[in-house]
Amino acid sequence: MERIWLKHYSAGVPADIDPGRYANLIELIETAFKTHAAKPAYKMMGATHTFAQVDEASRALAAYLQGLGLAKGDRVAIMMPNVFQYPVAIAAVLRAGYVAVNINPLYTPRELEHQLKDSGAKAIVIVENFLPTLKEVFDRVPTKHVVLASIGDMFGFVKGLLVNYVVRKKNKIVPLKLPGMVRFNDALAKGRSMSYTPPKVAADDIALLQYTGGTTGVSKGAVLLHRNLVANVLQAEAWYDPALRKVPAGESVHTVCALPLYHIFGFTANLMLSMHKGGVNVLIPNARDIPAVFKELSQHRIHSFPAVNTLFNAMANHADFNSVDWSHLVISVGGGMAVQQATAKLWLDKTHCPICEGYGLSETSPVATCNPTDSKAYTGTIGLPVCSTELKLIDDDGNEVAFGQPGEIAIKGPQVMAGYWQRPDETAKVMTADGFFRTGDVGVVDERGYFKIVDRKKDMILVSGFNVYPNEVEDVLTQMPGILECAAVGVPDEKAGEAVKVVIVKKDPAVTEAQVRAYCEANLTGYKRPKIVEFRTELPKTPVGKILRRELRDKPKA
Picture 1 (spheres, one colour):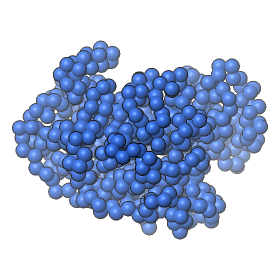
Picture 2 (cartoon, helix red, strand yellow):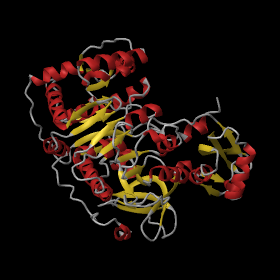
Picture 3 (cartoon, one colour):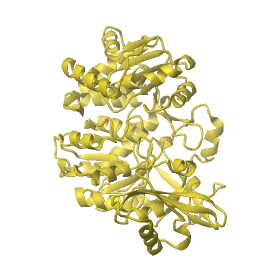
Picture 4 (cartoon, one colour):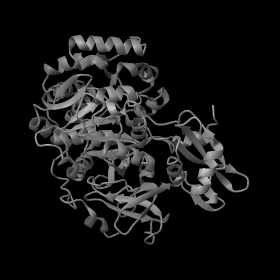
């Protein structure tokens, strides 16, 4: 497809970026440390760490890790929420010449065991809250070096003691020991007395193994090279620039860091982009604790907020919303799942800052498309392909579909992964001969080059031969007064093959099934209307906030 979208870019956004601007991700990080040394980099619970402090701590931890005798390219896992130690750990692992493996700290022992075995991680940096999970599988995994962090480690002695006391009491943490385990602060102290050797790392060396959610089978590690991540940071920088230019000169851009940093959206859009730009990440360890989120944000001037639809929705509907001064907010980016019209409208009404919906995957580092960041309103699309990125719509045989027809979205660009870790068969399934990555998402494109997700191929519901896309049903229902959120799934049906089932969380307890059906009758054609309407107090979600339709299909109501 011709790059018809370029003429609709915001003023000043280039058609292409230079992915060779930095030799590797280490150079990007160390340049940021040097350029922004005195600036604040991370804030949390009244404490602040500057770029210089993160530079010093990560260099010490890198020296400690090198002292363990690991070889260049060995994998080191990081299993922690959004706390001060995460950016130190990720910078240390990369600066030591190793490959970082992000791990969801809420994983079960089974999931953790799979990821540590599959990646071959020889070391792990982990917060003590999650040590019991590691202990359960420790004898069966190749991970024999453990750096154990406590939440309060980087708050200073007195405040650190208090934070650790509160966290340990609240989470009922029982002290545990594992062979080869060292405390985070002890590792830093030891590393400060050791020599650090800068590694020779090429652009095509692996920086990150980013495991996909595993909702379609066994969790696979997307192999992200240094050049993939450097490119995506520069792509995001170019795309964000029209909005960030509105921040007064000399003022550090404060970004809400509610997305988990172990998730690729948070990793690139929060950690790496803010580092590169010299901005501040306001760390939110648990985005599900909405009152705590508001308490933290009320202490800061917020400029940038990347998040998922469920968080925007929960916050905009919360009684504490006005405890935060939203007048400095210049950019809100939605990703990870579809942004729903009702949420976008409410967010715009309350903040006067529209949600710019974007799209990407772990396999694309992740940003592939986004709405222009100087947009005035919600578009209902995933926007335009970002700089240096091509998209096309293809059929099952890999042929481009006719214009105006839905097809599988395929992506090509410098941010696309090298493949799946040690799975050439799975890589072959998703990469085309001409270098495009097949996303598994069905989309359409308009004459301006704006793409719209119709749905995941696997989530599509087939009702009597008609395609029903859950996103459409959900988008309609969330605009109904009294509904907070909902999910649509396909369930077996004797007559139609499949039928539509909707699971709804009410905002107004008085909403009835009859009202829902009447609203659907007025807004959806017959075959798209739900046969089953179910009410629940909450929907199952991933830690990032993406609704797990799979669980609604597979599990009956409790």
